[in-house]
Image (cartoon, rainbow over all chains, first blue to last red; front, side, top):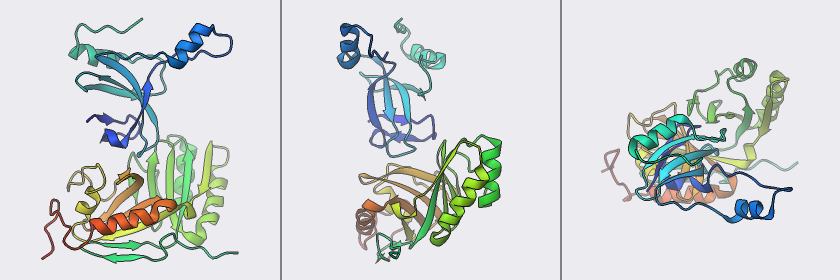
Length: 107
Length: 193
């Protein structure tokens, strides 16, 4: 059971109150992109054993989408942050590295 | 013109907690930038309430103002006054970015009254309803069973709950089962003897 804190309404709820939205920080490829880039954008997803960034929807609460950083192995949630960002915030990287010293954000 | 009707048509259930259709209530969704001073002034001027803080409920279903999300407020008023209030809000909000929508007939309001009201809600909602953790003045949007609801306490033994009209019957039945005599879990409140 995950417990997530919605950055918009401040509620810490368990996962049945939220809905998962898949991998976060995808780069959208549209018209003009190569077939390979469009294929990867549509179908290719990371499935790491460890630190993962996801989108979540506070479905039964304030109805907002947000980002979460968590470990797929231990279900530890390192932090949640607003959806109005294209990059992973520093404080989230710091929170992950304080728990997973060997982890480095992908370029 | 057809007469307005609540989804529950005055339904009432008396168990350890009474579950009652709150009747026709005006509800207006007010979207806008809550940090904008023009927005805040207009809300205070028309509703008589300051813009509520995060998860704050000012007042109750008779004229209260609820925080629904960072860009959404819900104003409660008399059912017949809803359109007039909405027009006044739209006029007062003027050029500030806003959307005022009358949702009175898209929602249902249910009142709960009884000592074990916290227990009844806690059976269906994944919320810490312990005294001190959830008190009057706070609103919580969450799920009850499988459907979205919002509720707030109006006292230590009473609460009000809003749900979509389409699931009002389900929510009423759900609460009635949870509140039935003999169904008390006596966690937050002592059982009735």
